[in-house]
Length: 272
Image 1: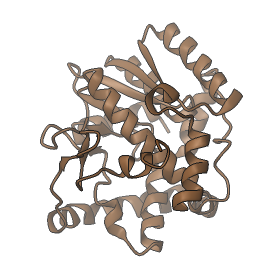
Image 2: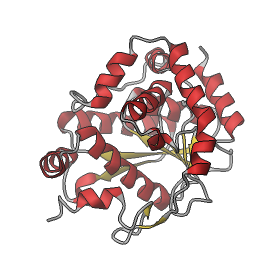
Image 3: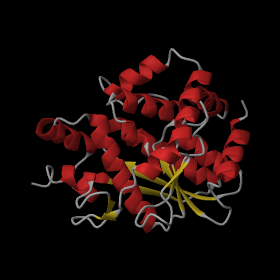
Image 4: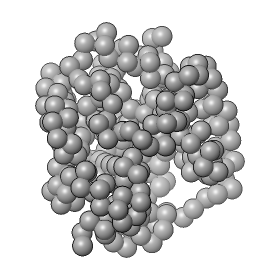
């Protein structure tokens, strides 16, 4: 598979990015976000990197240094947000407190925290688009997990592009890898000899997402694509029938679907 060609086609088909856009790429240091930054830069888009230092020990230190060198080599600006300066604690402490206080899984806490920080900082950087490295496997996992939880509406915003100027307060998120299998991205990153860690997150074990991901390794790329494309056919009607007003969080002033955003609902437990 020519994933550079597929990215280009996905961008064009869904009008994800314009050459005049200020494109901020959310970097984790892994194969997906590193590859999409490289491809967008190669295609001539004005890109910059945005990374969060989660303070996951040596794992974070290596990722941070790798991305500094990678972006420097491309001539791409990189902003690294210090989570301890932002929230007062590293992600491990935050997750441990919320596991005890709210019985939330590490992946849930990490996801809410990163989305909040990335949206806030993407706006600070003047982003027209916030690009993430989510791939076909990620999207298929989301559809299946939401179905098994009995709440497919959790995926109502699933698409190659979410948010936008019509949604006040949200930096528009786009996913050029939406239809690209993870296995193809892995091949691409290794062929390009990117200096990155290919290990999974050290905290990613024993969670519902990990169990779902492990099961989905047993099905074909075609079946994964069928899951995602078939659900996409339902997304417009789900959105139309389940529209929720976007308001301003009374605590942090970030956009929210309730008076207090999900991030502030959990941050209160680490700020006591």
